[in-house]
Image (cartoon, rainbow, N blue to C red; front, side, top):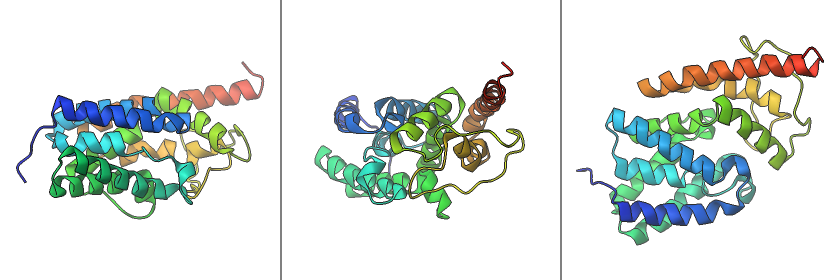
Length: 227
């Protein structure tokens, strides 16, 4: 398929639709998350030579359906992909372009990785990197606690009982929230840098990962009353 550019008018229609649609999402997956993923995807995609007509719509739609709207958390990607299909068909995207957007969304999610599905499209690799990068660093820390509050982690914020530089690989719950926000660092966040696929993504992930480690050490000291 010969790539076509996404026009400013098309992107504005997508942007306006998604921004309105995610108003009721939990704040960890609200408009600022979508906007951040789009910005990172655009940056990495430009360096990698991705088809922006596929990548940018996929980035906007990847989290449009909230996890609370599906029976199990991982199914939100399927629902988000179908939302993209419906909207993009009305916007004049071809069936081939829509199929690629759908595949990008479905194979880029972390839940897909947990189920053994890895991206093969360049656009899906870029989207996964962008999404994972917004899950680590300062924003990742903010989002994990926002998510814990929204979905009611049974153990709340949690205690740090392991070394952040050598964390255990805890099992992540893809059907609902993990036991605590701190648990989620060891089940997901501290492992994400190893899943980044692009050169630019790897460069960005390094500093974000190190920031999380510094935060966790500080968190432990404050909890013990040492600081």
